[in-house]
Amino acid sequence: MEFGSPQFWAAVLQIIAIDIVLGGDNAVVIALACRKLPERQRNLGIFWGVFGAIALRVVLVFFALQLLAIPYLKIVGGVLLVWIGIKLLQPEDGSGGHEIDASTTLMGAIRTIIVADAVMSLDNVIAIAGAAKDSLALVVFGLVVSVPIIVWGSKLVMTLMDRFPVVVVGGAALLGWIAGGMIVHDQAIQHWTTQNIPAPGWLPSLAGAALVVLVGKFLSGRRPRPAVDLAGGDEQAGREP
Image 1 (cartoon, rainbow, N blue to C red):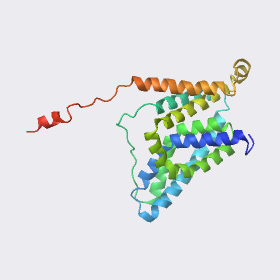
Image 2: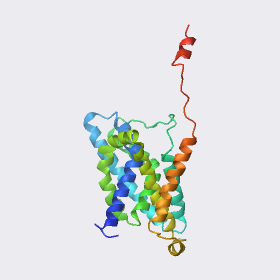
Image 3: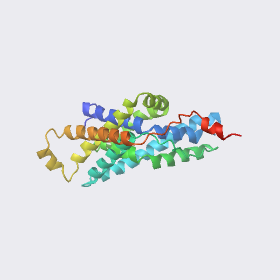
Image 4: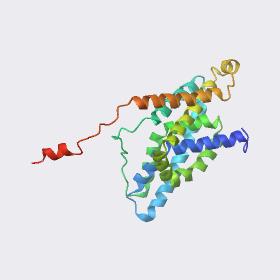
């Protein structure tokens, strides 16, 4: 994939979109880890924490790119991305939270950010590896471009995702699109898919995107909704002496 080609920039945009959709929690972790630092150290904590987390992610994606060259692992990665995309469309259960300890030292905050990012980045790493199409240079370029968007634009993005659910649907569809392409380009079946699937360049990706959205919406509609207290607090009031 040549630098500056339409395919290159399409992959860069996919990597940025993946980081925006899946990186919201990472931005929250950064804020939580640095919240007890003195004001003058917060920007340093954010900068070095993000720098370390991105460097770690590049290393993880490098290994992911190597592993995805092994037969059948792209199929496994694609199935995992389908599951992540479907899960993204499920409503919050309201019981989750970020168990992140805020540090009072700069090094402690940086360490917290890097460790938490390593634990939380499996979905990002697999999706980015699929979008990068075996190019580590593309991974690095896409991540560098996406850093300021994650750090400074995360609140805006999360607000848009809350206000406009179509943004979340689009992100889930993107994961399905990448998953479909990954599966049919696995070393074990690529020759067969090229010979037997019409339009192998985009049809499997379109099918993956449709599968994620349809199954995700179906399962979301089947989940029980929280009960609404029509009494408006009268029950609690009745318990008081």
